[in-house]
Image 1 (cartoon, one colour):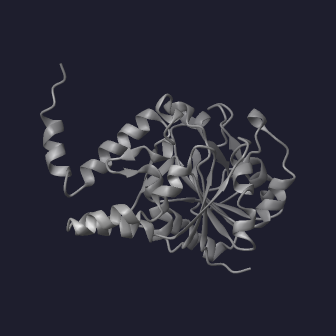
Image 2 (cartoon, rainbow, N blue to C red):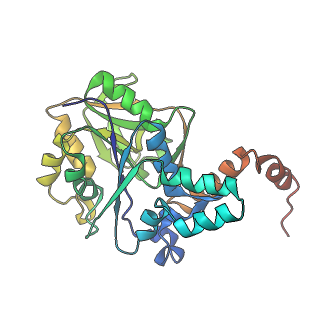
Length: 290
């Protein structure tokens, strides 16, 4: 097996019920953070980590995600004729980020099943998984940080960060048996435990480096919580016989599948923009709602 991570899988088949009614007709991954859909930030993270093949696991009525990363010759021609070079270059850069593929998850059977849909695409290589609802702002791309740990450890790596103990019920929480370190070898992950039952406060934040052995495990993993095939269950099975590592990555993570998280991300990404930040900051300072 080679140890360079060249492929990424982005599960993006969810129905987006937290964003109804807009997600009834628009994939939640296409909702913009300023002028780029959130899925683009995830694809850019993978591409900027040296990954050149990316699989979108989509569902019915989500073809706009594929279209977004495709060429649009009519629009490009119009921009060229009008001399709008900056806008044209933006489109050309977008369509050349990476080789983008897609596969449909035909039934909503959970994250584990979505990853299993990537089996033929991945083949015998290690691969990254980036959840479409999680955006990470960092100087070094988050998945690159995990890939560097994988190069050293040559075993599954989970991207984690500390959360307040009152929020453990929202995440998969790493069980490290009380050990410390970074990276930290873990014995498993407890899915959304109550604060009283949580083995710690290190939460998995939608970033993984996995090995293809996960597919055989997922194939025999029975449906778990909610009748879905849980990636957590497969990782726990892997951890019984192989090492699994948790790495506390550097960066600010946003849950853009949540309304408040989406608003925070939109605000902060806008403030970081050279073309918008200063004027937007002045606007916020003087904002008085009636």
